Amino acid sequence: MMGRLAMIAVAGLLATAVPAWAQTPALKLLTGAKGGTFFEYGEAAAKFITAETGLAMAVEPSGGSYENIRALHEGRADLALVAMGPGFEAWNNSAAWTKGETMRRLRALFPMYETPFHMGLRPDAGVTGIAGVDGKRVGVGPENGPGAAMFRDMVAELKLKPEIVFGAPQALADDLMAGRLDGFFFGAGVPVPAFQQMADRDRLRLLPLDGAAADALRKHYPYLVTSAIPAGSYKGQPQAVAAVSVWNFVAAREGLSDDAAYRIVKAVMGDPAKATKIHVTATGTTVANVKANTFMPFHPGAVRYFREAGIALAVQ
Image (cartoon, rainbow, N blue to C red; front, side, top):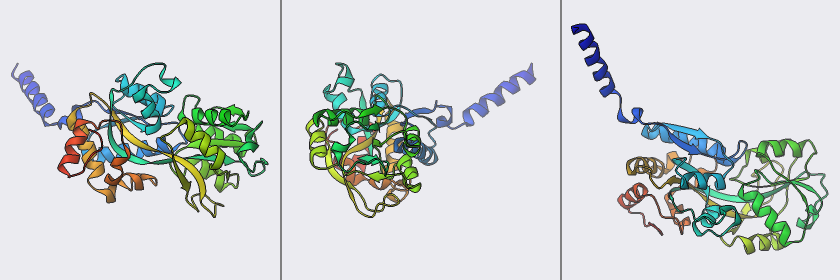
């Protein structure tokens, strides 16, 4: 009897010796499709957060912002990467993909980076301007992703009729390199891994998104801003190429604990020298870009950190 009691006591001591965070289920983080920057950034950010806070993270690929926003709103994920364009649409129920539902049970944590939308072409596709995509086979990313919606709205506005192909970025890059696609329209931080792979094999030429193309996009998506793909972002790209961009944030479900949100934001925002090394795009992961969120309230745990750090927020 005494031996059994002693064993129970030892087991109890061992249980209490385990740190509290180690007994907490891993936080589910949704990223994006494999081959895209969301996926790479999400995996790297999860490792950084775990190393800095001890919070366990379970990283999962996804179809991108639309899926991520709905999952946060419905409480099926703890954290997710969100493009603020779809976030704005969900918050205001202003796009067809929301299916009439206003989705506001999510909160901003911290800025990630600015996403330029690229129009990549096979060098021998014979396309010299946006009108040239008429009748061509163009990949647009996952069917329910923001890139697909933007491309469809852009070509409809311009009265162009390309053949639209859906798929994960890596699969579409493979198809373009193999000659099965003429172009690939996608939004992700520079350099997009799939685009970089195409460029490294001399199978990529960027088409500027300016003039009529940019006007058509901004007509449907007023939150887009003019930007550029910096010169040298990809092999064989000697000059900057016009683009349009949207900001991305890491967001959390409304019910995420204040303590977890505080620890995550403090770890990422508290030391820029560390945070900007999360990923090549993370030069935008700084407190200076917190102001890029103009509509989604920050999580109370994030607000607590920003107040302590003396950082003013546009929305709380």
